[in-house]
Amino acid sequence: MKSLHKNYYEMTIIDHHREYPLPKQPNVHIQTCWDGFRASSMIDIFIELFYPNHPVPESSCRTTAHINDDELVAVMKRAWFTHPNVLTDPYEPIDWPCDVHATFYRITGHIDDLEKWAELYATTIINESMSVGGDDDYFDYFPTFHFMFYCVCRELDLPDLYNETYDSIVANLRNDDDSIFDDDPNISNMWTE
Image (cartoon, rainbow, N blue to C red; front, side, top):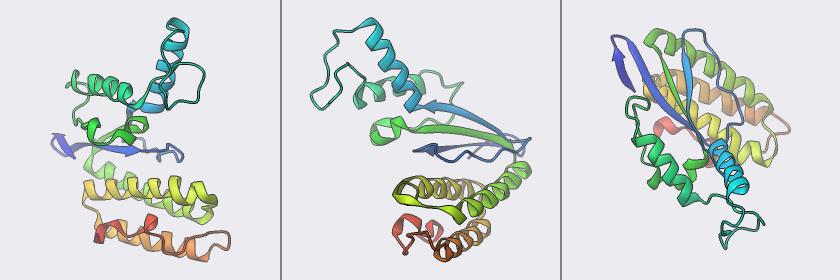
């Protein structure tokens, strides 16, 4: 987390799936800095329209050309590092090739508003934990939402909020007859690790 002015901060968090919306709070600004899925789709459309003879990567089973991970990393790196006044907390995409298709959010606000937003996030994730179902929710989407909440609490130094919320999440998952939660490491207490 970086301080822009006195008591005004910004942080960057990554959403691998964009399945659950982040809670909204009037005094907290959430900006999408990078939407890898959208970027990839737009580049694919551009290639198909203007370069129909572009070679298809061997690993692809599509019949039309499309951007591969290395090309998307190059686009992200150019976008991320050539505009330092636009994106203030750069990430090195080369180390995380799976993240280039993720969404990066920049979240800004006064510390008091960010803490209230974190409490709203806690309520949101507890409510979502009451109806987690299916392999995708369990193994991908909900654990990502949980990890994003951990990142927010870590950035704001809110261990009590995180731990209380984690306990509520675990209780909800265990009490849900439809849940397949069985102490899988996908939903572990990240603060103690």
